Image (cartoon, rainbow, N blue to C red; front, side):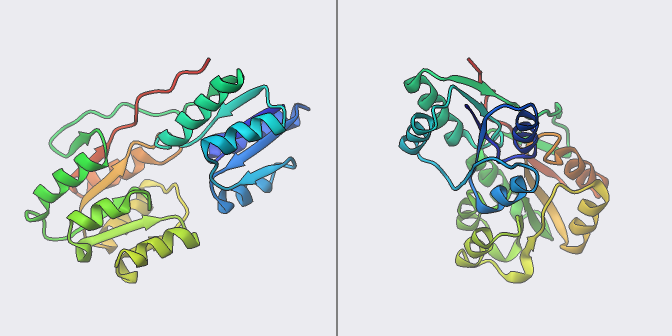
Length: 240
């Protein structure tokens, strides 16, 4: 039995492809929304909620999993760490399906940082020098870091159109007029229109890879002379 962590487009494709090959597959997504997307093409069992380390071990045991394919988002580090450790404990094969990406070179229009904390520090230094808004194309994860250190009035956030993400934005005090709930990825033109519409003067985004539309966001920002803070991917996870 194969377990696919299928919270990304690559993961959904892997689960569906393996199933079509006649293999026994169970899929796991961190959200109900991810499960709904997968269920459109995948006929097997889906666990659509976050799993702790103990729950992952239990799932591997109960379903007699002998291989796990980790196709989680590049920034879902905690999830990947948990499933790798669960595979080690249960002596199960672990395979990382890494999302394709590109190399981005720093220049006068873009600065790369290692994590959210570093992005917030840099954005705080730049905030007084910009006239427009700070456009967060990083989703709702760790949004509290930005709200705590930056002027919430100037924050425009783009999130998935799901209940949990929207509720988090509102609980943090963000104005509804500065919340964009849309399912990406987006092409360069849509990004450009949104940056202009919301008067973006700084873009903060993550290196989410080709499937995450990173290049399109960066190109749109640079075309409008909007500086970019790019949060680099965590170190590559090794399969075994």
